Image (cartoon, rainbow, N blue to C red; front, side):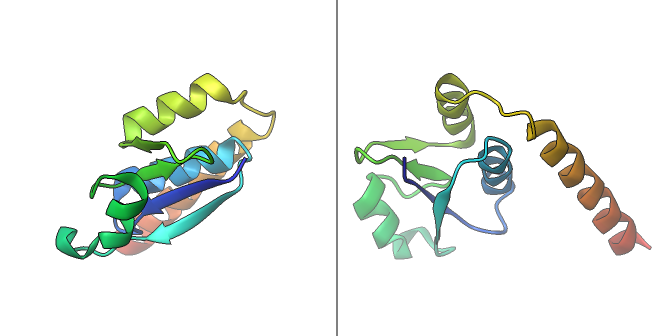
Length: 103
């Protein structure tokens, strides 16, 4: 299954969706989306919306928004054994980053 994620690096919801896709061991293609909504023509053409995150499925259907994407993923994919290790590593990395940034 080929998934395409329309997102930005600055969007917290996009980050959480990327983390969930990684936890599930799913391959996906990332499309960076412009900050300005009026410039999101590629996103609009592909998904019919101008909001992120948006996950485009192989059949052309779009799942839009963090909650809807996570619900879709949880319904269709079993969590592999390594998912918890990914969560722990991400938490540790975030703590280290915040500590370094706040000092």
